[in-house]
Amino acid sequence: MKIIRISTDNEVSVHDFPEGSYSEQNRVLRELIGPCCELYEHVMPKRLYTELGASGKAGKQKGSCVSMLMDEEALYHDLDDNLVGSYLYESDKHGWAITGNILFVGETWGRDGIDFCGIAEEQFTMLLPKLTDLAEKARNHK
Image (cartoon, rainbow, N blue to C red; front, side):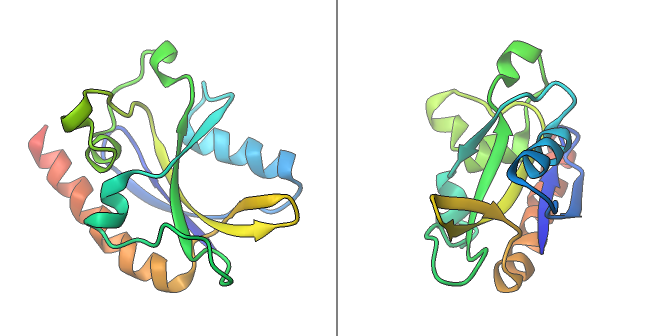
C-alpha cells in the first residue's frame, strides 16, 4: 500500500508504507518527513475531508481513513511552510502554519487502537490527483 509525501517545495512523491516493526515503520516515516524529525504529529486537517473528499473515519477496510503526519517540533527546526498542508489545515483561518514535509497515510484498527498503514486503493486513486493539483497551484503561487 502507498503513502503520499508533499515537500515544502510542493513536490509530490509516492512511497510504499514501510514494512517491519512499529519502531522500524516509525523510523522510516520520520525520515520521510525530514532529517530533523524525531517525533511526528497525527493531524486530521478539515479541508482534506470537506474539500478533497478523503474519508476521515477508520472502517473495516485497511487504509480507508486518511490522515496527515507532520514534524511535531517543526517550528523549532526553522522549516519552511508547507503550503498544501497549511491550506488543508485551514491556516488561513487561524494563523498556525504547517511547516516541513508532510505525509498522507492510511489508518486501520489494530489490537491497541488505530495504527497507520498505506492508503486504500480507492482513497489513493481519488486523492493523489487532487493533492498533485493543489501542489501545482502552490508552486505557481510562490
